[in-house]
Length: 156
DNA sequence: GCCAACGTTGGC
DNA sequence: GCCAACGTTGGC
Image (cartoon, rainbow, N blue to C red; front, side, top):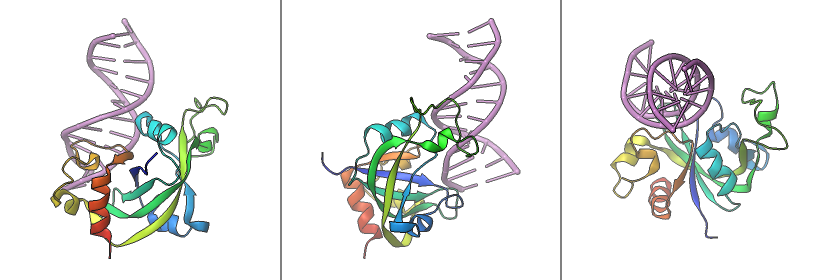
């Protein structure tokens, strides 16, 4: 399996790239995804070694702030089992989990956020899932070509 | 805060 | 299975 590329959205007021960066080993589980299409990617497709952009939504400005690496593939999201957790879902059972998560490790913080406006202006990203009208998937595929373009924007 | 777009729920 | 009502996302 070649390395795959993804984008994970988060609201930084809830969990930011810096929060991930400051975790032990710069690693955390990516919990709380409660959308079936995103769940399917987490559960069925994300593999250790895959590369991930971290995107900050609902902030000013919004954009990609850094990269991370998947260090553990899809496994049950235990926060769904905890009635005191904000992401509790009583329909998800330990022996038949509805929701999944992965572990990610922060890799590189971009010196400057790559804003949504910048992404929209770059040739070659026109078909990026993030930039499609009405797109709100919180776990998205990124093509190798898109990854290369954006990584270069954030580089150096 | 507004609201378009999308997803989910539930009555029928 | 249809679809109206409702809830959420997320840019602006």
